[in-house]
Image 1 (cartoon, rainbow, N blue to C red):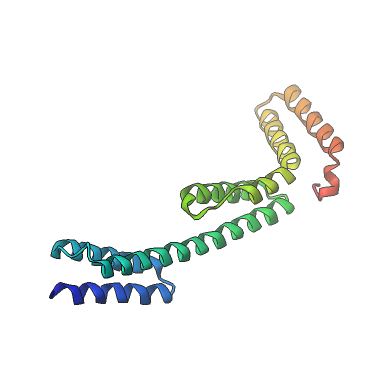
Image 2: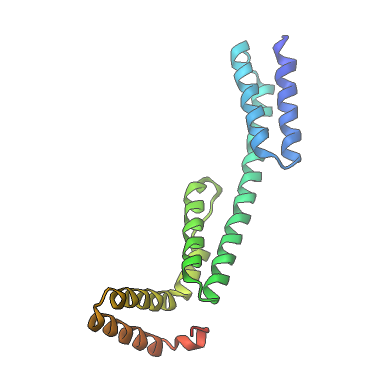
Length: 168
């Protein structure tokens, strides 16, 4: 019996931390409460299980909302970088967004918006890669291959009218 008030206090504090926007701290306190309950042999009590489940549910929701906000921010940053022709920065944001989606799969995130964004800029990105590769070839002394790639980039630029996307 002496351990139950302590367990309840930890679970109450855990709920307070959730409402304060500190889900990581709340989860740590809830885990501590479960360990204590197990040590005292009361982990199967319905009131403890219910409190713990409640904390876990709210914590998951809070963390997922935060992750969804991070994902939206990364996608917006990538879009802005793409529109400014900062392809390396945009690629890094896209990579971070994909990592976030896969690392937090339990939050129900998907790649739909990210895929739409990368599809929108696929031709400018391809043009940029060709130009970068051409510059590397020219810098290495392979002028013929480098110039050929510059011509390919020019054809891509003209065919997809990349000037209409602000690509200069």
